[in-house]
Image (cartoon, rainbow, N blue to C red; front, top):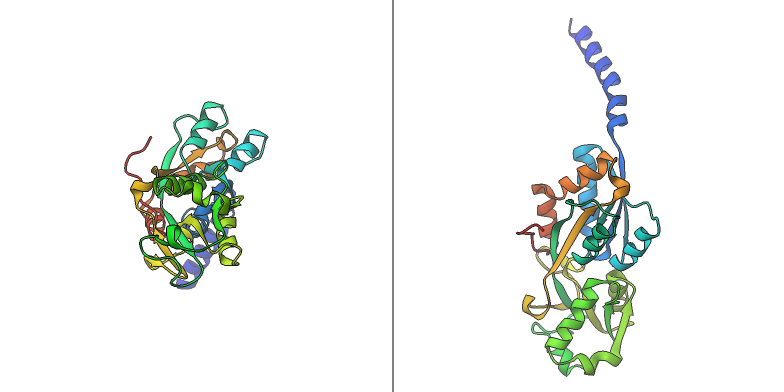
Length: 257
């Protein structure tokens, strides 16, 4: 009797498995570079929870906008700011009413050298560094935020000749990690570990030194008929995803647009 029951259960599994595979889908996602680590973790949990998979591409938000406008097949866009998803919505490339803030970014002045950056960022005015890395402010919101900080500190003119521009925030970090720049502005999420800066040295910039970095997600028109695209956007609002986002040093969204 037990053997017959086990055979029936096995048969049901064989029947159900193909059906679940048919329901599973893949979504193509354009993701701002600063969100690389948390998004990789979220994508893994998303697949485990829903069966859907997310194919991730990381880069500068500004470049993604240009690619989307020129026919790139991305179906979901996770920007490093709110303006670019809004622009895509207004120009008809994204779906009205689907834009929301998934994370609030935090900026850090960072060096790969332990002890190089002090806890108040005084190295910016007293240090003898020759290169200061930031992401290209024309393409990356974190680069624009870095310029805001330098202006707020009265160091814009002094540091302008020292700036080394990365195409995105990941390249800016690479300049610092390889020693091509002694220090630079990057996202806290890139260097945080267990709630603090995990390596090198850094100054977490006070939030009053730059405008709030609201990172918005939006459904693109190419993803309207893809259940995985809708599911991913919903999953980004889940408790599990929000816990991952917070773990990487981001603020959690309070007010949705």
